[in-house]
Image 1 (cartoon, one colour):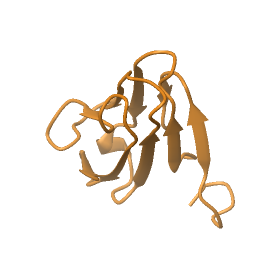
Image 2 (tube, helix red, strand yellow):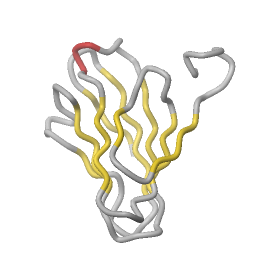
Image 3 (cartoon, rainbow, N blue to C red):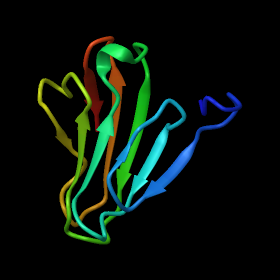
Length: 103
């Protein structure tokens, strides 16, 4: 839920680097201006079960990468969202320490 009204999901669109916040739920990324890094909150400082959805569009061949402030995603320091130049989706969920992805 949004964290604002608990009745709807929040949606935010970006074209440049950003950091996910407690009020984010769905993030749409258009990497038309260059590669985009999305910083994910530390897994250890985020409530277990917290989910974020990230979608990249196919407008450019630049990359979209999720990087946790601390911790890992699927055991790695970062995770790409789809392939460059193609639509991609990635959901991540917090396990209390790190992040696990679902595609």
